[in-house]
Length: 337
Image 1 (cartoon, rainbow, N blue to C red):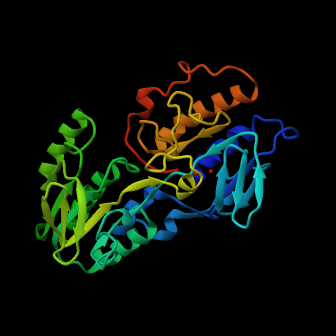
Image 2 (tube, rainbow, N blue to C red):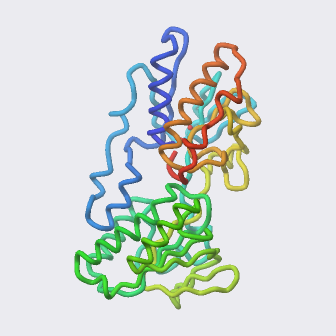
Image 3 (cartoon, rainbow, N blue to C red):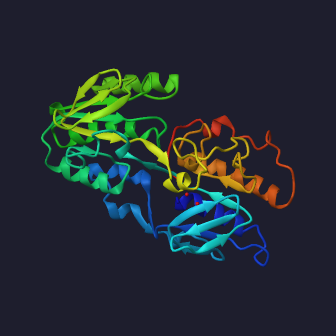
């Protein structure tokens, strides 16, 4: 679960629903909140891991029943959530916000001998900290920033990473010894033509090479290369990567997801396409929007409006609740049950 998604909805609902009529239960596997956007700054010494950690209890509103537990299974046909240890919770309505997780094991070779030694992600606190330790003593070479697959959380983060890397290596005096490549499956630096044009010029100005339309097949640890499906090979001395992103294993176990474990969701209402009393928030859904925190901010208003309509027996107007493209056209990032 993503505490930010859950906190938004818990606050909205607790402030609206009558306490003597509705019990709101929030289930979260972890007690510590990690501010995921902050992971990006750890490799460069701007943050340390303690700067991105806070107790989740600081954010939950009073009057909400909080259970810290792993969820073993959701049984949507029976309106039940099964916790680890076989505790059963019944629900009238369920909001699923299980998010997206990185799955480096999906790419052959990625988690072999060089993982967190010369191959790193910065989408986990462990990966960001390991990369910080590596950069402390690195003297230069080929730095490759690779995006394994679309979609992924916070699409702008890899670009931010190479710009931060450029500034960091200038600051410590070894930029002339570092060759930075930005390797992406997109046709350019970003998803939108105007942004791509501007960013491409900025990347060129900073001597950061863009390699587009690279579809990662595997990582060759022995020869330190990433290899695409069409046979293209790119050597590296250090590889930073956005691994394959997928929905939660819980969604797969519960039979609720697509082939990437994202829940098929009505993009206008944020209601599950299959279950009328289940709504989906954040990266758990398959809606065609950016997986970014800003999207959740606007989507929470849509979900709240439609859930209240369902509770009060009012019809949901799919047109009036449609996610405005100016709100969602951003790029992909974090999420929970």
